[in-house]
Length: 249
Image (tube, rainbow, N blue to C red; front, side, top):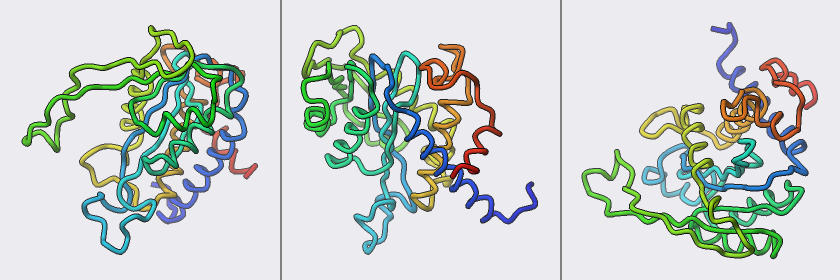
């Protein structure tokens, strides 16, 4: 299609992904958000966890990989993200990054992953209105383990600190973002062979996706891009604008 060697194209995409990540890390600061929703989405690199060779077990970027996301439900902006593992260490790094990007006190909602509790307390102290939405799941029938999600039979709103408005204790918007990621990045689709073979390729794909999502694509709910809605930019970016980030790298 391009007349270029496949490896050249892949190398260019990785470099552009890194440029997109660097730009957003510098730009997405002092954000006037009022509410934030956080979640983690599963993917895998190299091989599924059960197929990882013994000598590679425990290595970052081999097997299960999670992308942590923080979404402003008002502007639809992805405030920050992090690719890594789903454990307490990454939870603290992620929440610390979220806190540093905000200009004011926010209402924060996460799922029931317990490491969030200590991470939020360490990063925000008492300067946050924090709640958890803990979902309750039914039994997982043997015949549906692979193809169907476990049925959610309810959810509990738990106020952790501050005075969060119970009307907004929800993770629906950030969970809908998970679908956007799976539809927009083939490597996130379940039951596929389009997974990333290297962690840096996954990281580049995620950075490119969020660059397009935040700056290029118009969100129907706000009728502009999330970056325009939050006030980071005054115009809709083009693909050419994104590619020009390579010049400043």
